Image (cartoon, rainbow, N blue to C red; front, side, top):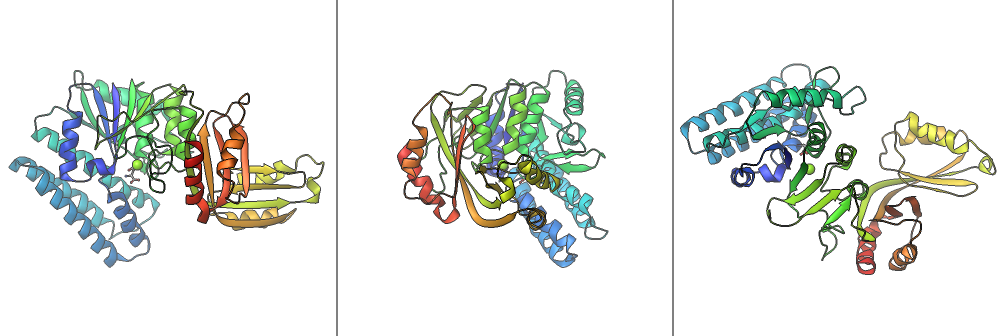
Length: 436
Ligand code: ASP
Ligand code: MG
C-alpha cells in the first residue's frame, strides 16, 4: 500500500479534481490523503476570526462567498443529476453547520470544528466524483483513526490500531480517500495538525500502516536547490536523506511540512515529492541515505529574532547557559541558532510570542540586546568533519554580505548564517553562483 497526498492546488478546482481522478486510477492499492481546496482553510480562518471578534455580519458575508465557490465547483464537477444532487446536499449541510456557529458561543473548540470543514468537503466531493465515474473507492473518515495526545503529538498506538481496524472493514478494496490535517485530540474533540498539516497526516498514516512509500504531490517538481521564487535557474534535487530534507523543510523550502519527515524516518519509509502538473518528472526521493553530493541546497527562513546575552558572570562559570535555556524552556520557545564566546551568547528564535517576558527574565541576570528583521540562510548537504574546504566555499560566495552569526558543525547536514532580511535575496543569489 502506498500513500498519495495531494495539496490544495491539486484539488483546487473541478478541472484539477478530474485530472486527479485520472492520476490515481491505475489499479494499484493506495490511500489518497487530500487537503482542503486551495484558499478554503484561509477562508475558514478568516471566518473563525470574525466569529471570535463577534462580527457576525462579516462572518456571514465570508460564509456566503465561500458557499458560492462550492456551489460553482459542484455545478462544474458533476455530470449526472444524482451526483449533482448529492454534491449540493453535502454543501448545504456543511454551510448550514458553519452558519450555526454564528449563533452560539464561539471558543477554540468551535474554531477547530470550523477549520476541519475544508478537508471534509474536498474529500467528500472528490469521492462523489469517483463514484460518478464508477471508480471504486472508499472514503475513510480521518477522525476515526487520526489522533493527537495531550502534548499534541501523534498518538501512534491509537492511529496504528484504528487505521488497521478501518482498513480491515474493506477487504479487497484498493483505493481509499481520507482527509489530511484533521484529527481528534486527547479529549476526543475535532482538532488539527496545524496549518499545512496534511503532509504530516500522510507520513503519520504511512508510518502507522507501514506503507511501501509516501508520495507528496504538489505543483512543483520536488525540492529545489534554492528558492525558485527568488533565484532563477534552480533545479530539483533528485535525492535527499531524511535529515537533509528535514533541515530544508524547516528552513524555508515551503514544499514540505517541517515535522512530517520524522514519522517516515522512524519507520524508514521512502518519501517521494512529485508534481501533479508534470507527473512524469522525477521529483525528489527522500530516504535514509544521502546521495553523497556534498552541497545539496540552500534555503532561507525569515522572521528571525536574535537575542544577544552578555554577562561578566559567564566568564569561567558553569551553569550559565542552563539558566538561560531554562527561561526559553519555560516559555516553550525553541532556539534555532546559537553562537557563544567566553562572556556572551547569541541565539535566535522564530517566534516573538513570549519575547517580552523572556527578555524581562534574562535582564534579571545579564545584559540583553534584541535584534529583529533577520533571516537564517541555511546550506544543506553532507559536511562530515573529515571533509575540508566547505567553509571557504560558502564564505567566499558570501564575501560581500555582512553576516551576524554563523553556525557550523551543529549537524553534519547544515551550515547556517544569519543575515539582515534585506540581504536575503542577494545572499541566495551569491550562494547559487558560488556553490552550484
Ligand atoms: N488545509 C490545511 C491548510 O491549508 C492543511 C493543508 O493544506 O496541508 O493548512
Ligand atoms: Mg501544503
